[in-house]
Image (cartoon, rainbow over all chains, first blue to last red; front, side, top):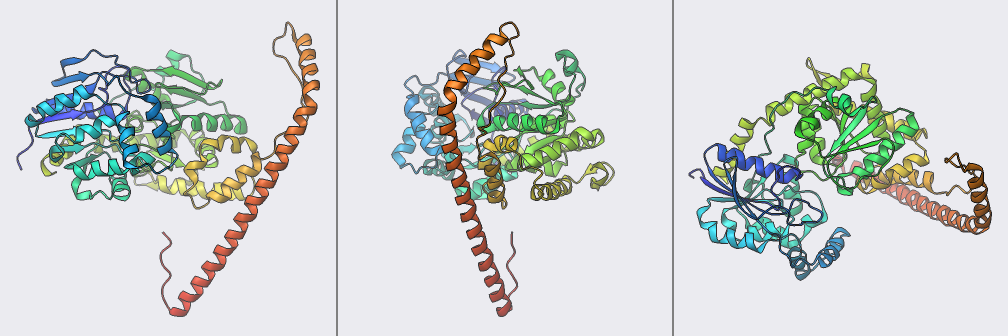
Length: 390
Length: 155
């Protein structure tokens, strides 16, 4: 078929400045690359920046950002957070919700009626609508506007929400899916019965960079070796596990290793944890380059942008074995190790601390892998092929 | 350990082989009791849910439970970090502790008793099921041998 020329993107947030979110960043960058390649691209998102409060912080309206027409709309004000959380907790506990309860959960999730109305009015001019991540009411409703032209970018995790009938139906109704990794595609097949032929693995391109491995420690007055984590700080991402593990490691081995944490969200404040908050891109890369390892204990990732960025910075990865995607990235790149439990973690971190040559070689392997697999030309080729084939 | 790192080509490292080797070492150390440590049991609080699909989950979980099961009710030294009022504050804390001791010891002893019974019960259930499973596996293997069928793949 002819290459789709006019593309819409729908996401709960527009990733810019301090708005952190892997899925949102991925969608924004794909949109910008398509715009740079001469396609007409519109990005619909809400005015929210914070994924905890979903407050409308950005001004609504339309503006042009790097060739993309960005249109922001307010999050619905009638959202009943208490009802949403009650349903969400029940889903999290593994309770079976009937269809009405599932729809109630979606209705009180993040939604924007203004955005959906606008999308409905404009849908005819778009050849494809790319929407994600999958578990928001906004995306569920956006996928119903023109399902025959909608490609989900689900950023799917193995979590209770992925087992809901309503979301299974959404996956079945759309034209196809763009996955970030092969394990994510396999998960969709296993959990949702999704036919892999209706999906394509695309991922996101990453620009290579050089970073001074001593700059971050110098600027921040760090004299001890440190491991680095960057991203949302919450139980789902494994940050409590990371602070617990490093605390036990320090006590048991007597080794003075610090944890430098960047990003937003609550954090267990212990003497060895340095909360550096939101970092600029440059400082984040320097922090990665100087770390003994980038530790990513999350089991719920569909791509692992920060892990791949840390590979580019030359830092080895140390990831949880339960995170199929992160483990897959480490295994196929040769850039990192994975642990099942604390004893594995202790052995592996001690090995990385004791063997700088191994660290360098893991870092070099990871870097070469990202430059090869996630160079923008390679990703753009996969994206264009997917847009044409699906 | 670095001398044993598995090489691929000129620069690469076979990370799967490295992890496999580390796991082997770790499993041997676990069996030898190197990781029987209440601090590890505490550190694993957020991880046990991730391990539930692991083949060795039950054994590791029980080990963590055994290490964490008893509340330490031994007496402890009362200290004060604020140097200025330290003697006064230490005396005050000792007075408060002497009033609470009787009550808290009673509670903790009961808690230890319940914890101990629970872990023994779980261990007994685990042992029973493991034994039954082994017996069933042996019977299946024997039946397959008699039928001349190749055993099914384990993974």
